Length: 107
Image (cartoon, rainbow, N blue to C red):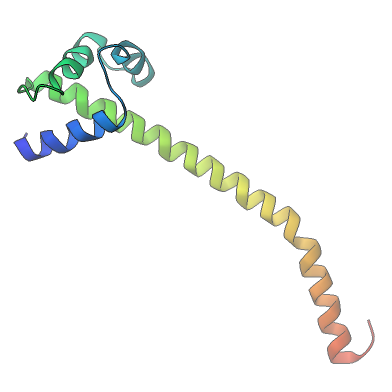
């Protein structure tokens, strides 16, 4: 993996607040090897080169987090759409009645 790609991924993990203290919890949440993720967390601040296995764990961890975020966003969007559908139909009925009254003069 190119060094620039590794730096981008490392920045993403830093933004996720990956530290040696929480590496085990993050590994459990994402289903990756806790030992390797702890090594990645230790190497990120120093800029030390990662082994291919550590890079794989780092990428897998980010992918799992992204998947989780996308799922949460999709569920929230679905809930919002459902709420809007239920709350907007009375307004649609009132507007239809007003339109009929305006066009025909009688409802």
